[in-house]
Image (cartoon, rainbow, N blue to C red; front, side, top):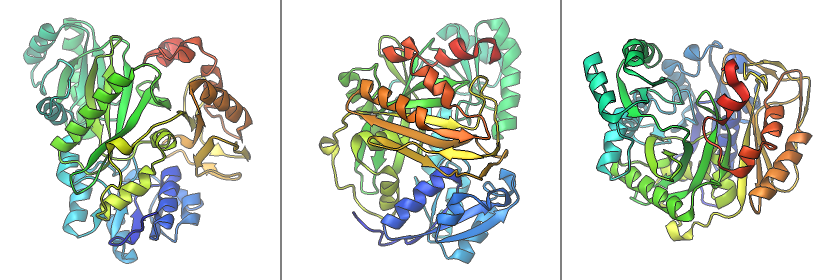
Length: 453
């Protein structure tokens, strides 16, 4: 394995399982890890495993993991020479990345201007069009109702209102008529301003019952860009992913190759470096359209690691260290099938959060099973952050074997004291629509939530 030469002390600006994942990669690469934590996370496993740990504030995110001055102070007193952002929190904050750049602290991710571009959905959409990547018919940000009505009439209802600065499925509304558009446009603009500090909204043609498929890429600082397979992310509730698998059981190898090449074109066009994901929606005829690029590691990255044998987190750090990719596109061979189950501290019927103390815990194991988690018996899941408490990943020689292994591993998983999504996943694995591989993003909301959503 390669070692870090230029960056050695890495502060992890995150918490939970991704912080532990980073600590493990840093240790294998010969570096030192510095954890930060809020008062609510003082007993978290990432604090115990890191080489050093620094408390940065109170429990709420805006007073800790989103508190840039506190994190900068932690960087200064720990003499960190790089920052690993993980996902969420400040991972795609261009201002944070720019501050680090000016301070000569390496941000393990793309440059701030690239984050700015890819984080602006309207600008990213324009860049995709310039890179000859298929985009959904739509518009630049609209400012007036008259302008919005003209765009919607031109592309045809239903349409999707999307916050230009949105992400993670937030800031989206489906509109079926001009009357709905008249009512919902100002609502969407207010929501965009409240959630993202940016009221701009743009309009896209709404693709009914699409597949959500994404391409993992790696890009070094020497101009080398590769794609590392695809991930099917269509099992979602309220636009939030619950299960991911690789490869997609729906698309053909020909379409997969075209999507990968399109993702590489986009990454090169925007000057991306690091590990990123280009996301697409795919219609029933396998036409694919660009949605967005996430310039960070994804929660679901393990399924790509399992099928490719490539350590994506380690390569994020090696790229930031100035290393060249030591493989080319033709060297990448994705084999077998991997499925990731997001184990959330949520009611498996309604998906409402269920934080609290873990009274008993047994994690599954065995051949082809991986668990990424920060929880342990006696740990209390705090109410302040995302409900993800573990990622259970299984691998098989094909999809059928991966599903069988998933059932076995889920059955072994024991988490007592709080409700989790384990039972939902067990139910899903017996669902004929899921087994067929033809399921779409509407499966959970329509079939499992119904009027509850």
